[in-house]
Image (tube, rainbow, N blue to C red; front, side):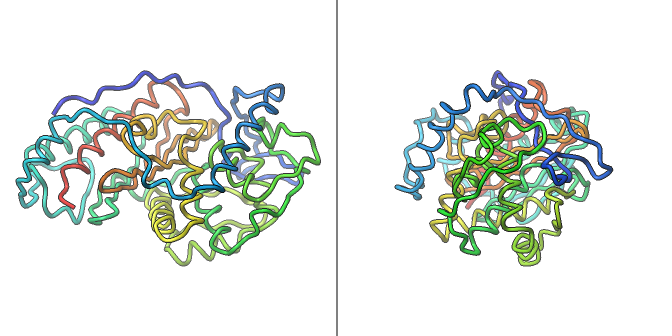
Length: 360
């Protein structure tokens, strides 16, 4: 199998997602009270123009929540596509031991090719030179791959996705307005850059929290609606992550956050609110990881996260391939560098290969 070709990463140091407490003034701190420094390339001087374009996107979500029929650009067939088209089915047999575990892989189009793919994934993990945890699940077959599943990390901004889902399934009024009366420390995304007293609808805050990873938007939602619905959701899906008073972030392992994204996938299959949420997560402002690797082939709904002080760099994505899958990658890599973005993209490309080789 050909080696994964790394795309050039034009990573710009953007606002890092805080992973800790917020004090009463909206500042960010870790569990010991140390304030967090954020990196960002946005500015208040351009926020008004940017906000107008984003609001237009939000209005578009009102007119159409079903994008499952959107056409994707035609992609030239590769070696794996040719193997799949032949339709030869084999009972899966692992030829080697790998740096990950797997389950429920029963039939494949080529044992030789899928084992090559698994070896390449093992090589990427070995060469990453960091703690790295991975959860892959094909949402049709239930096939799974998981690496280092119990290692704990700062959860970072991927938690915003299940938090928003918990609000939606409890029927919050999307048109209700919330005043921007506080600002998350060092945050200069759209909502944080707005004048104090600016009003946003709940739906707009959801969009900014998911698409821009705006910490102030998430904080305002959290102040308004609290944490109980989120904790109820965790009990329902076995997520194992819990929030509390003024504690917007926590720790988790990759399987806990993966369960949240499996749940979001199901929610989007069943409800218009879920479809709207997934669309908010497509083409996010920070899109240098899984989405950049696979976004030209498929619709990819993702939520990245980073934390500089505690060395956390993550991405979770729902990939709407012909046989959809969820891929979550958690690491303690230094966030948002060119080289470290490449690791996510290389893994995404290899898991796409593996996913196509599984008979669904």
